[in-house]
Every structure is written in structure tokens, then in C-alpha cells.
Image (tube, rainbow, N blue to C red; front, top):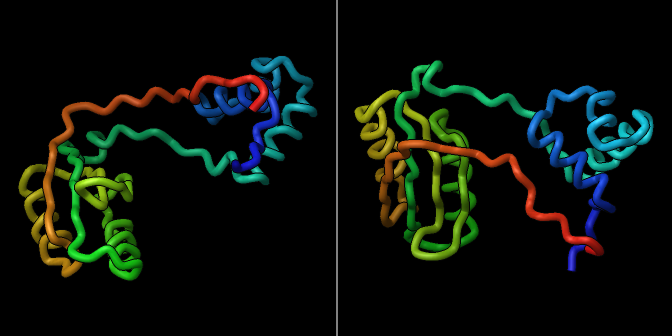
Length: 160
């Protein structure tokens, strides 16, 4: 079993608050979790240094940037060697259209979330970035109508 770095409910509340709003000042965060600002800052530093907190990001409206179509592309590789998996993963991460990459188990090996200008852009990406790759055995595309994030953590379980 992996040792937990989140020590208690207060750590958990800090993470939940930052997940909802990463721009909270330390003073605001401390008030939300009922800690002194110095104690809160020390906990946030420990969570950051231990790797629990990995970064803070802006949420963008992709349509405002000219990407009016999003899709999930499922890819099955021809071979499942480490080299093929790592090569394909690196390739997909280098594509400017890639939003997120999932390496999966099951019928497909990868699920890639992409953001594009339009259907022509999707067709060109599919042909040039996926079907021409020697590692790719099969590809399927599903258009996304909506995406909703919960910004929620799994329920806190006392004693873990």
C-alpha cells in the first residue's frame, strides 16, 4: 500500500479549496480551512514539495481561441512494446491539438482529447497524425458535445 501524504482532513480541505480556486491567497485559504495563515502556508508547502500539488492552471474557453470542435480519438496500437507505446505517447503529446492523453487498458490503448477549428481540421489531423503512424492499428473518433468538470475530490475517509 502506498503511504498517504495527505495527513488529515485539514490537508484534504486545503486541496479541495485549491482545486476549486487555485488563486486563493494564503490568507483566504487559511480562513476557509480554519487555520492560522502560517500553519496553512506550511501545509501547502509540504503538499507541494511532496508532489501532491503539481501545478496551478488557468481554465480557458477554447472557442474564444478558435477551436470550435473537440473530439476523443481512440487508438489501438499494432504492437504493445514499450518502444511503440512511448513513441506514440511522445508523438501525441507533441501535437498542438492535444488537450489530454490517457493511456488505457481494454480494447484501445490510448484515448486522446483534441481541440480543433472544424471538421476539416479533424480529418487532416486524423490522416496526418494518426493513420500514417506505423504504430497505429485502429482509430475511432467521437465528437464531444459538452465537457463538465466537477473539481471534486473523492470522499474523505477517516483513518487512511
